[in-house]
Image 1 (tube, one colour):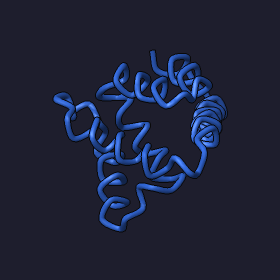
Image 2 (cartoon, helix red, strand yellow):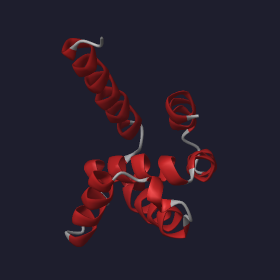
Image 3 (spheres, rainbow, N blue to C red):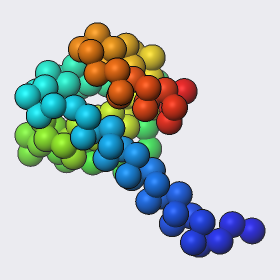
Length: 109
């Protein structure tokens, strides 16, 4: 039986990993990253693999024009990695942020 402590530890580790990933993105690229990830998300065919809570978070942030900040980028990465992981990784490779490519491959692929 999995203990509550083990579950909490896993969740905290995942949050910290995602914080490290988004911290690797220069703030000057937030607009570019946001627009491209939105495009990937809107073009995806298998959007049913996005959990409802995540979809609601993305929509909430979009309505408030908050997808170009660290929280918005984080949610967009989570969503695009669920529906188009290869395209998302390819985008980060194109813009030259190799540490994100490595981190996303380790976490999702």
